[in-house]
Length: 281
Image 1 (tube, rainbow, N blue to C red):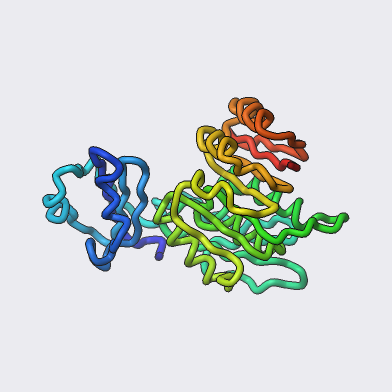
Image 2 (cartoon, rainbow, N blue to C red):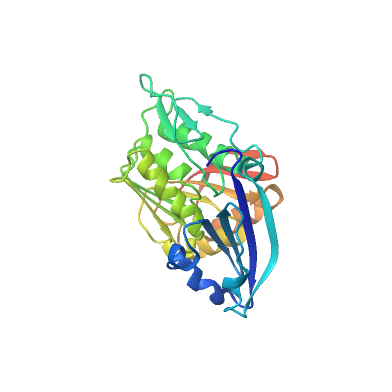
């Protein structure tokens, strides 16, 4: 989207989360071609339209839905400076947009168009996860571990999953509960020509805990981390990269995982309010 393109964002609330489920199906047919994106979050929905748009006639047929707020702003205001890259992480360069430089030598260039979803890689949690991913899969001295599969829970726009594939993982599955994030992640798969190696699906991370893979990446809040641990997401892995946990929640995360299985903290990083860790399992 152009930096000056106008967005109208409707913040919709439902009496129950299931009252919003119909919005996740046939979005364009229901709301027309001006619908740019949809994000569902519990009993809230955020609908993004290009240009000005009047949603009230449509919502008159759905009495269980109410408009909490209407935001009108330019795309660059929505991004709020998020497109400040590129990120240079050793052999990996993450370029915030559909166009960027061609790779040189052994350099891996990842193109991420965030669209209306969250992030191209500059958020502290994503960036620190990327650092550990590069350290694990592209070490400066030792040979990288052989990775046939990785699972990316809380995949957002696909940054970590796509980076893992570029760095050698043969098959990657990413999962996010946001329709908006998954739609954009699928576009980023095509943008990087990784359709044969990377898949993204919309759903709850907990429902995909047992998908096989030597590497687990989980950038999700503590309450989801605890559900994942209990569901066995950290079992039968060789390595894990976690984030989304506040620094003061770190010991609670480690305690929950310690009750489930042994692990070794290879390294960790505190960045802003967040704790990120690289674990050997």
